[in-house]
Length: 360
Image (cartoon, rainbow, N blue to C red):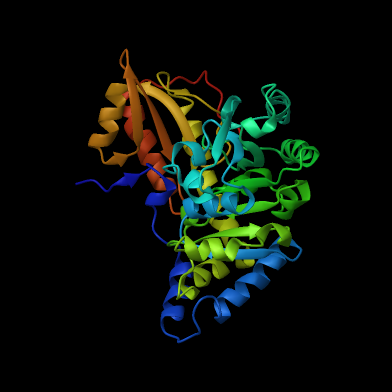
């Protein structure tokens, strides 16, 4: 049987070597519980260093918990969370934000390529019904996703424009950064320059999709907005007694740009794959490939060929012999795996030289 190539998600990948090594070390020491361990204390120092200022960082186990707890900390039960209609908090978190908020309402914004603009947000905030505000949910927080669910990226200027609308309406800005490392690699920006320096107040910092076993973090750039976060984390079941097993993953992840090195491989392999797919006559790329996700339309028969060859990925919506698909590369996707996928496709479908390679 041919070796499996898994492009279903970056969640399918294993764990990066430095993360495993750190976990093993943490497993062989005895420390104080509930964050009073040297790993969690070091994580705070590392976070201060990479963000170039003092922050508050709180490890949690999952991205959904990070988002839900972060939003619940700044939204009352009668609050509105403004987000894109295709955002993870809307599509893929089983109403966890609403549950943790204690009611709450996600108010959905449209926009191309998984992004909404400052204009979209401003118009929505200004065009409420004429009824007194007590008759509708109160605007509480705005959430953006970086990189988006389509793998696209908000520029620093776009984030700044959104944050200015937030400021003028006294709303905090939250960023779901499940794939922030991939966005940073694509832009070449420092993490400070695409978060707090452009107005982000709260960050859900992703790591699991980029080589970590199971650990995320919530980062507050304004301590006043974190007033009751620790109580919410405890009540929500995410204050680990052995918190060092989360922190001991995040410390090596963030130190010495390891997280950037891991994401560089993901993005590079996606770029190579997209360039090859762009030459296939029957394949259409549906969005610009900026990070490690590729959305495409291809013949359903090609979908069948790939899966018979043990290439795993998500596909849906067959119509008129065509199907939609998503390929996601990870920190340990190899050049050889990309070459094999393209070879399988090229052996089944005609290649045209007329298509320009996808630029990144």
